[in-house]
Amino acid sequence: MKARPHSGERVSEANEPRERSGASVVPASERVRGAGAAKPAGQMIDAHQHYWRYDAAQYDWIDDSMAALRRDFLPPDAKREMDAHDVAGCVAVQARQSLDETRWLLDLADRYAFIRGVVGWIDLQGDVDAQLDPLVSRPALVGVRHIVQGEADGFLERPAFLAGIARLERPGLAYDILVFARQLPAAVAFARRFPRQRFVLDHLGKPDVRGGELETWHRHLEAMAALPNVCCKLSGLVTEADWRAWTPARLRPYLDAALDAFGPERLMVGSDWPVCLVAATYAETLALVRDAIGEYSTDERHRMLSGTAMDFWNLR
Image: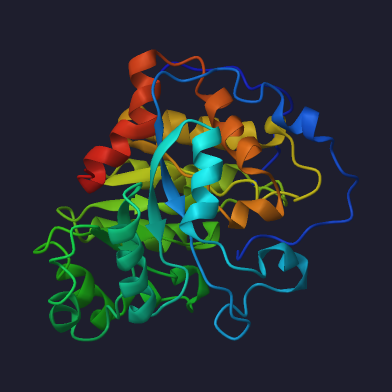
């Protein structure tokens, strides 16, 4: 993989999103920089969006620092942003560990054709086949996710959870790995157990960008990338950084590390909308990645912006 110069300072070493700090606000013009000037050929697939009808009890993780998220976020809201930024379709990802939410997301996909796939939730420690039987006939269901970042250490070694993961290969469902950086070694060992199962790492394994930790995370990311059945989403970085003071230069080393580790063939781009809005606009979030991949060939950019997601999930 060709090396790329970092655009600016190098971070020394790299969550629910991390809380804002008291640092001064960086102007949007500096944060966006090129504002996506490295325009990719063709439209993209946003590989990571969430939808919800806000309820304080069901979304209690949305605390006062994220008050902007305390409202409904629905497909028509996302579509306005997508249309303005050359995004053709998206994958909706679960935000609650609820079968009801999974069914609701599938209903939304039936209604809105631009939702190309749904990554839902099932209880992987329960009767997986019984839960999936009524769902696998829904063509939008392409994967499953559990919010492992909120679980105790050792969760990825639980026999019941491992048995559930083993049941995903038969219906051809992928699995999204959502962990903090400190959980990456366990996640690597977990993914290594299932060489035929398709995995995608959400948000680059959530490096501690705000704390400036890079080296240890990078080493574990490379170990994950060594597994050929694992892809990675270029997503979620703005909320791992200081929400008010992040810059592309501060985030670029993390993007470059993922680009070098996984390469265009196993990378996809996700906005993490609307969670990203606590730290950046939809335009800023996409511009950050579009600028970072601007030096790649047209075919490589197309691969990251749509091809990997289309192939990984067999999207229509």
